[in-house]
Length: 364
Image 1: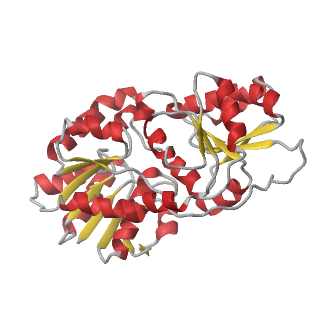
Image 2: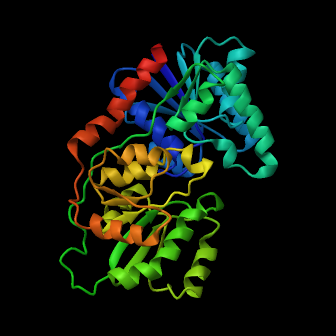
Image 3: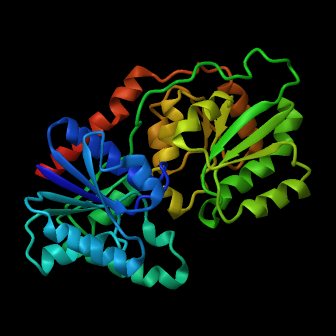
């Protein structure tokens, strides 16, 4: 079969491109013809070239109208396409496929993939337009795929061919004991956080900032290592100064895949906080799978897909997010856990298992 995955494609850790590559590379191994259609950003071309992991990469100019037109033409000129998989209903991703199918009679199966509820992530002024695209996807797509159970349940009422397909562990890559193991008692506890410094996810960092002073009192010296970039970086730099945490919060910036091993080797524990909001209940955070791939001890509250995933991960400790002392107790308990990926967890949650399920969905 010939599959075409359409995405924008930005940084390596962009959830959409991770999903395309996770499924696409496994499909290619099974002998399918896989094409990834993304923008010609220099980092995309440098990272993937024309062929990578058995997949072909086709590039188009970025920019809303030019991107839509070029994707439409690329898709129109491709013959024998069986499945077009759109990472969301954004106009530069979904519309080129929809026009090819509905106006020009292309016979491919159209799948729209929601890694989260995307209308919650766009600016309020653009939300109505994005909701229109979502509505079109429910009416016109052959199948809808969602990465969280809660979103699957909601979208199933809008399109009866809606299926649940969470993210996966890309590879098993434990880095052994943290570099701080065996250090002196006064060496700081190294806490890791990976994520964008944006308004949509600010609640996660706000909680960790509030936690740090009490954590230091109860546990001793501690540092919060933030791997990520975004428009709120300056805000959090100032917040660290205001709270007297300038030596306890380390801004690492965006950490590319090639440097993740080194970053996580320095981390003792990952502390997650997900506010109980629709934006978190409707999504399946890829970064949690990344933490799991390193066998890291993970401390988290119970919200949405994260709880479903970590219930099966032996190195996770949950806490009551209404009680900061509960989080600190969970952090101390997590430090006693082994730093290893449970084999049964990996086999159940790798991209091989997900691709098997994906092919069942395609053939349903």
